[in-house]
Image (cartoon, rainbow, N blue to C red; front, side):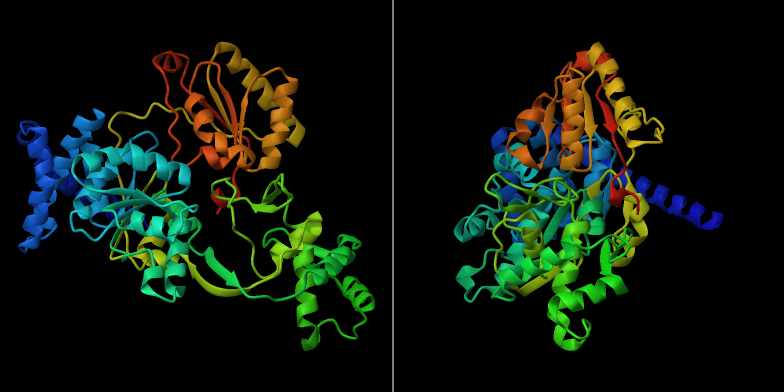
Length: 519
């Protein structure tokens, strides 16, 4: 085992040394590029495309293209990628995973690889975990590409077919993993070529790659249609399970999040529905509806997995991002079971028309790359599933973040009491605070305690995500207290002033470990 680890570290060191030498070659072009006028620098894009058309390869123009994008970053944003960022972009360019610590500038890092591959004219997709980040980065980093003469589009769920086709026709398209996957499914169902929006799957950079490619890899994207069971059948099943008693009539498997009838519960069901044997093949639909009603009532929690909006409709909450997913529904009758549980209008159950997992979808790309702050622990999975290596990029400066040990409390109330006291103490000094929760329910509970303690704060969760940009823009200010679900987690950029840095920087409290972090 020791020899294996030693070989692993030697391999990574050799890779970093090789990438470092390549980054030096790119940086050596800095003086040459800085002497170019804006017009000459922009003209490089047409020059590169012409060279590619005459038979040169993307690899042959890589160093120059990286140097051009680097210089454009300085002229447009006054940000010139550091050497470690060039190394990270080289990792992306070859189709691997760049692990970069929080605050190392992954958004700027990818610009060089994105520009380089966009020159091929086949379209580059930059995939983010939510639409807020997709729109932000398309505007922010898009300025670099637009300056260099490339087109930039952003693909949002609200766009119609024509607008989506226009976004994907751009040289570079920013989108979310879910919308990209659904567009692929819809394209494969389109009756005519005019109804399709994608133009191929060439090169993509997946932000927060471990979340999308590993944590959510087996999450199925499903398009449904047609009609199945009647709504009234779910109401009957819901009324039945509400009368059952835990451990006597039904049992819950916490680990697998499953719920099943006991022998006594089965007998009650047979009596209630007038069947001789509940598990006879002809009762397959009935037992399925009962199991979905059990799951809806005793496994699926309101304001955790879903919420009921102001229009009395069920809105699903993404467990990885903490955001609502408009238009998305559970399949296999679970959506109808939840609607029956909450007493809202029950939509007609549909049948599955098309489905694909993220794992199978992203493997369709000619070249797949990703970046994240946490990927090394999943390196074996990246290698096995996607044939991608994980390269840890060193930080530009030594890490200043202080990671304290977890504090364990005997009771839930004791934990929250300690949290409020710690927040009051730091808030009194003016230090900005971010409190992370795993659900809307927990979010609101802590908000009530902070209000009672007289601590002014902002709440960010699936119920008010429309104010996300405004809330995040103030989260790093002196005296700010922000209470958020994992919406304010991956990819969120909280700016800190020098005054805040003097106070110790942003203090982050995690109220509990998220389920998908405990794998």
